[in-house]
Image (cartoon, rainbow, N blue to C red):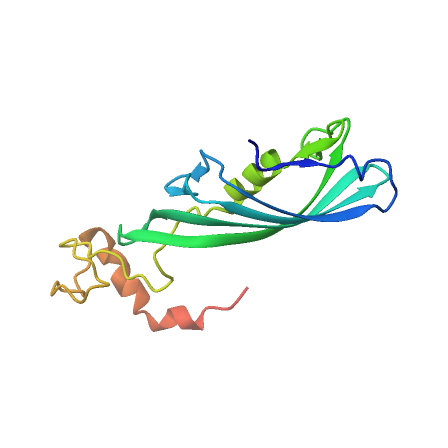
Length: 175
């Protein structure tokens, strides 16, 4: 069973015919980098389908859970993406501009799959205030201070330290 296929026979070639649909189902293989939509969890789609001159217009929202490894502390990160869409389904779809309208149905899976992949976080974090790992000892700084000297500067950057303390930098004209 394909959860994102919708029968639209009652809308085709009926100007201004409109119907709301709620769809829910799983889609395996939704992954970008380390972020993924769990294969066992449902994606929710709410859409309004409307017959227009060029075909069938689908507009609505998609909501999906995601999980990943935090890119700062390596702990678990999870969240939910929500986005809106407005796409056209045509008998002869234009590559990259519209989707295929079948005889009496549309398959929203390609639309949902494409949009979810675009919305998954490229740098997932467990929280916006994640402090990450200590660069010296590897301790999780979200759990507390590790005792390492925070003022220690990488010797490769030491030459720039005096540059930051130069009072003339503040006097440079703005462009």
